[in-house]
Length: 412
Picture 1 (tube, helix red, strand yellow):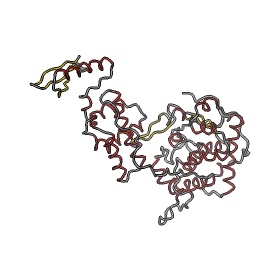
Picture 2 (tube, helix red, strand yellow):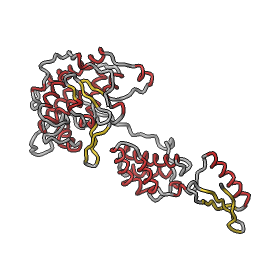
Picture 3 (cartoon, one colour):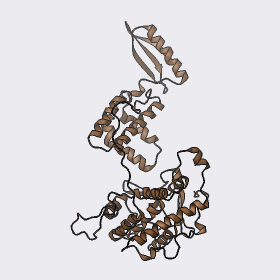
Picture 4 (spheres, one colour):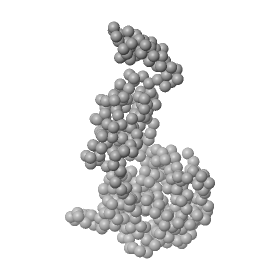
């Protein structure tokens, strides 16, 4: 319900009933006719459900962020990232600004200023994305008429070339693993080799437990509910992997079955990959103590306990996954087999639905991975990886029938 109400000799306002039963007021009309016309239009939009209360957008972004965060339903690590960006970047600039006063032009200027201070493009993009999501939800809740932050097509063309990710050859992976074993222990080598020859993510391998490691059948299972180890604010917890497609079964080449069996015999922890102290490895510590010196070398250091030479400077743990993908491409493995192994989906929905992996493709994939391991071993001398890990019992192209790719998804 809405009506016109005189405020002075030549001043009228529109009064209307809000959803909570209180009365709202829109002043500034010079005649009863103008106020009545606005009131009639307001009532019509209220009946159609398109009415946007101009007072609703006066709440500040800080006020809205409280409700928005309470309703947020994302992974714990994603929520932690959003809260950090809000606290450190978004609210210091926009917290006292009313939702209705935030404009796309002002946000674009802010993004440009933040970028100029030296923040990475990906960080600035994520900041703007979070702000845009907040405003989009405010528009959905009819606090503002529309989200003012949208893709801008004007301005300078983006001239920053996307940095190509690094990848390593099997020989380089084996050399890096060998140095990591010398630096922090054999567990680090087992982790690096498994990552490179399965394409599994850090969190997926950190969350891998013995009961999901089926060496007699030659596969590991990334569980859909607890298949990844998440590290949030220094605390570990098990949860779902990155995407629904990431819940999968990954088959193992023969050498890796031998390697993991030997590795599991070295400790009794329920998780497969733990440190020498039987603790979950922390990603930052692993990078600093193992991955970086093992890949980059530590020649600049004076008298380090273990001298490491540069193998593939800059290579990150995640890029072992890129390496695995590259090997599959080089070995002409069909794209659907690559996607299933890495937990991806194909862009083409028709191919995604109608493509399948036959036993011959699966066996060829495992044989190619086994051959890459054998070739890497013959090309180098390893000093710190136990000889018990070496595939002395399985021929290069022999894939146990029991390890063929399962046709069903892992059980919950």
